[in-house]
Image (cartoon, rainbow over all chains, first blue to last red; front, side):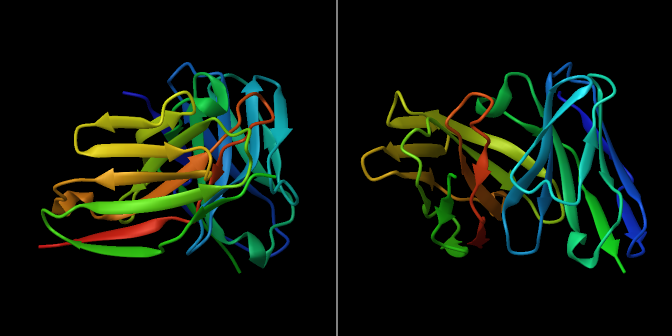
Length: 113
Length: 113
C-alpha cells in the first residue's frame, strides 16, 4: 500500500517564526503536492513538484516556499508564519500527475499564535 | 481558473437508503473527476473517479455519473452503511501540468442507523 508520512503531526508556532513541514513518501511517485484545508473548506493546492530539485506554484503559494531535495521528500516552509496560516496541511503523492490517484499523508495540524 | 462547487454541505440518509452528492465545474476542458473520502479526524483517500470519455462508472456500491453538457457530475452511494459516514470531496482537472486538481468544499454525509 502507498505510504505518505508527515512530520510533525501537530505544531504550535509563533507569529513571525519559521515553520518547516516535512513529507516523505515510499511510493516511488514523481509527483508530490502540498494542500491546506481550512475548516469548512475543501483542499487548496499550495505547491507541487514533479521532479526532484524543482517545485511549482499552486493556487495559493503566497507566504509559502517548497523544497524537493529528493524524489521521496517534499518540504513546505513558512518563513514568517502568520495567523492566517493556521490550518491543516496535507501532503500527497501520485504517479502520473493531476489525473492520477493521489495518496495523502495523515496531515499536520498547524496553529499559529 | 477552474471552480468546483458541491451544492450540499451536509446530507443525512437512513441506513440502507441511497445518497447522492452533486458537483458542478466551470472549465469545459476538465476531463478527470475523482472523489475522495475523509472520515472524521483522518486523512483523505480516493474512492472512485471518472474520465470524460465515459458518462458512467460503477464500483461496488458507488456510481459516478458525468453530464458534460451541464458540467455536472455526481456520486451515488447505494445501500448506505454507517461506515459511509464521512466528508466526500469532488474534484476536477483538465490534465497536463497546468491542469491542477481543484476540489469542492466537501459534503458531510451522515448515515442514520
